[in-house]
Every structure is written in structure tokens, then in C-alpha cells.
Length: 292
Image (cartoon, rainbow, N blue to C red; front, side, top):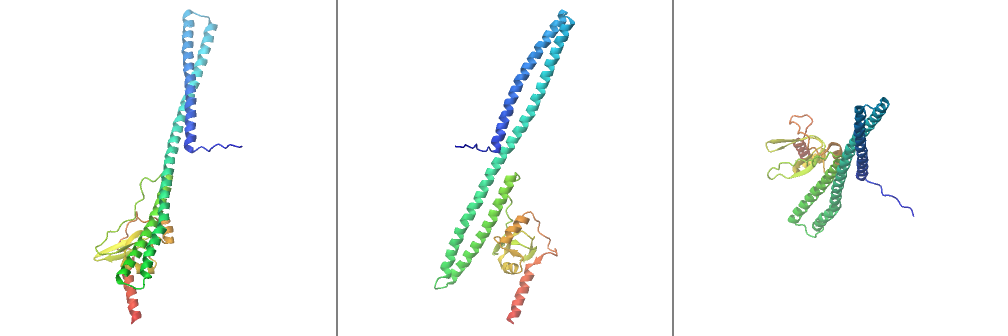
């Protein structure tokens, strides 16, 4: 029966390499210690020979031995310095591999969270659809029930859009985490300041937009998540200036342009802005003309 060795992880490989370097360094240090001791003894011997007036041949032999011991000690000292540099490099590689392993683990957990949300979304959609069926299939239609139906449908759209957006953001965070550049959680899409009594829909812009809320002029850049007043949503969708967050093309555009949190709002006099109020007025005038 054949046995196969388990492939070592990068951390294990670097740990083994570091242990090997440390063991090699210990052996070299031992040899260097012996070489230094031998050199010291040879120096003492040479000094005694010189002091005692030994023959030239004896002195030359002693000096040659001392020079050989010095060269050996110098070589070993250079090898120890070299292995010290290798140990520093191995320690750095081990630290980086350990950090990468932790990043991989965190990224896996973030991706698992995104997958869990995606698995839970169909159940939510089915529950909302059941509530809506209960109203639409009832033999009697009541105004209060129809209002409830509209509220459920609005909540369903909001939750589905938000789920798509947060799953995309989580997977983006996982990619950044694996790459080691996730210093902070990606910024959430800008949350609009809600005016009193004004209903909004989180939507993705396909063009730079302008609209008015009372006396205040609002603008939004292209390719950004914004809170658009629901009254302007039909005309913006009809003219292809916005789309829902769960739309397939929006997911692609988000990968290309992001959710727009870093984009500055365009100036109110920017010629590229699409005036949604003017579009709405034109649509209303067209409808009145058709009626006439």
C-alpha cells in the first residue's frame, strides 16, 4: 500500500526552514568557538617560542599555524554572519506567511458570511411572496390590505437590493483581505439625509442626476448608490438613468466603478446632469396631451 506525504503549508515550510537555519547556526557557532580557542592557544604558543629564542624554523612553523588558525576563524565568522542574515530572512518570510494564513482565514469567513446571506435570501423572498399572494388571491379586495401589499413589496425590493449589495461588498472585502490591503472595512454607500415625509429608494445611477427637494437642489454622480425620492423613480427608470441594485448590469458596473462612496457630487450647473424634475414634467405634459 502506497503512502503519500501531506503537502506542507507555506507556514510549515518556512518554520522548517527556520529551524534548519537555527540548527546550522548553532553548529557553526560551536565550530567558531573551537577555532577561536585554538587560535588563542596558538598565539600563546607562538609568543612563548619567540620569547624563549626558538629557532627560525620553529617560529616560521608556529606563525604559519597561527595564520591558518586566523584564516579558519575568519571564514567561520563570515559563515556565521551569512547564516544570521538567512535567519533574519527566514523569520521575515515566516511572519509574512503567518499573516497571509490569518488573512486567508478571515477572507474565508467573510465569504462564508456572504454565502449564508445569499442562502437565506430565497426564504425571505418566498415569505414575502406568500404574504402578497394572501392579499392578491383573496376573494375580497380591501384598501388596507392593498396598502399592506404595497408595503410588503417595497420592503421585499429593499431587502433584495440590500442583500445583493452587501454580498458584493463582502466578497470585495474578502478579495482585498487576501491581497493584504484591507486596512478597513469598505465604506458603506452614502446614506441620504431623509427629508420629513419623503420616501426614498436606494438605487444605482447610470447618469449624473439633478432633482429638487423643496428649495434645495440635489445632485448625484453617475455610477453611485443614492437614495432617490420614490416620486422620481418611475421617470428615472423609464429613461434608463437608474436601475435597481439587484439588476445584473448594476452588479457588473459596481465591480467596474464601485458604489460611488468616493465620488464628489457634481456641481448644479454641470451640463452633464439629467434634470429628473424636468423629465417628470415633460412626461406629465405628454400624458395630458394624450388625454386631450
